[in-house]
Picture 1 (cartoon, rainbow, N blue to C red):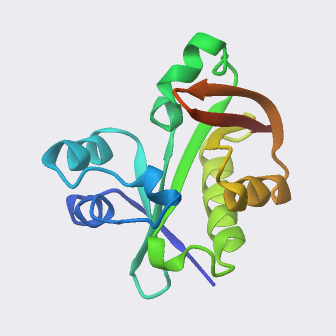
Picture 2: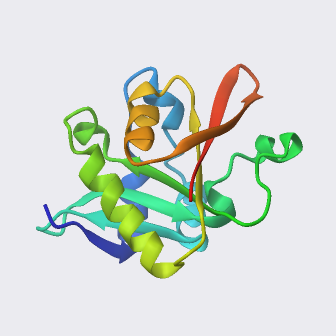
Length: 156
């Protein structure tokens, strides 16, 4: 499936902030508010579309992909590009993750060639952790933000 990367727009952002994931993934639900839309518009976020132009997910790069609590644990040393991503809830768990994630990686590699990648994922999200390992990411460290454990993973 050929996926399309597009710049984030208010149209896409207003859809994303309304996505609702089932537990335990409801941890990733965002606020359907002007502030939520503003964050998606002001940070380096991108929309991922299917071949028919339908929004299927998003990703971000840079500091917006970091979990702020990780900074005090030394999780975000220089020399990496951080990536974060989310897929439309109705599409998760259907075997589309590798194609979706591969398209994001291709885009990032073309945009910032030669810089190692880093991502942070909640450890309970075993589907995502497995996907990232399959794509060649390795665990670098773990830290907690409150009761939630996060895994920082890198790929050179």
